Amino acid sequence: MSPCCEKQGPHSPAGSLGRDSAQGSQPNHPASLYIAGVPVSDSKDTGCGEPSTPGSEWRMFTPYPKLPPIRKQGGAATEGKRMSLVSREVSESKILSMFELYKDAEEDCILADGIERFCMDLEVKPEEFVVLVLAWKFGAQTMCEFTRAEFLQGCKALRADSIKGIQSRFPELLADVRDRQAFKDLYRWTYTFGLDSASGQRTLPTDMAITLWKLVFSQGEPPVLQRWLEFLEKHTNVRGIPKDTWELFLNFTEQVGDDLSSYDDTEAWPSLLDDFVEFENDRHNQNVTTD
Image (cartoon, rainbow, N blue to C red; front, side, top):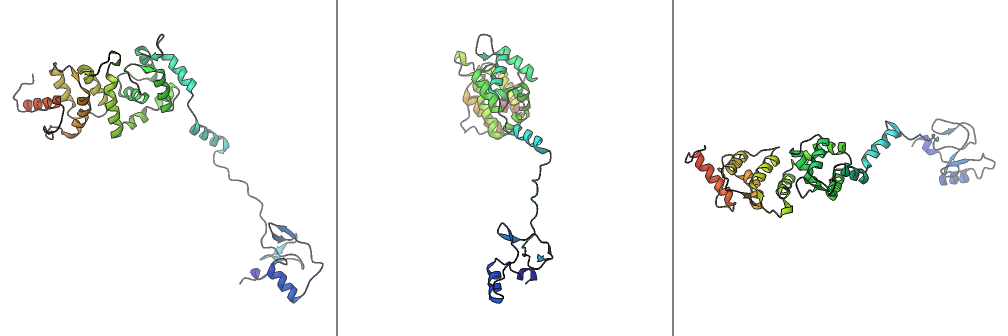
């Protein structure tokens, strides 16, 4: 045991017992100062807490001054700025002011002219893929139209209340739809988006469907797409695309392969897809001309 550890303070149980049994009481010893229950004296100690003068109290440790808190690099101003960016909420009033810039003079919504000006300020063209994704994120129900509620909720969802704020979200929007399920949701929504809901339209006109297929697949075109669109353009009797044909075409592009060799006509494909495969097989076998 260390010599330091053998010593006991006069007020510890072991120290008091040893002193009383061996020497009896010792009057007139110096008064002690206690810090957190530990006896200290104002005399200096030498090595291992030994008192430097007879009769002084033994100290368990020498108190250290309290250290100041460590400051983070950059100071309070930098930290405050970072926290303000993290916790910043979009301003509803700013979003509504932006809506008013593009709103129709008579209708409480943004119509074709306003959409065009909105796209110009965003530095994109209305026919670009990112505009389709933006409309999807806004939950738009009708092409070339944003209602007040759609615009407000869409901007809130993007956490953007300015043109620059919306522009800054474009990379994120494009990254989101690289996810297979997200793209599937976008693809299904696109069909409804293309319908003329005001007239009660329930089947997408073929020319509109062709335009939307080109747009929705513009970032990753399936090998069979161009042949499918060519088939539709040649068969002018196909005036509309039903919803089930639109939705199953996405599955079709994922299953049939580049040469349609994986197509199984016993499966419940829409009849228009059956006709397309038959047309392609006949053309491949040169049973029909391609003029």
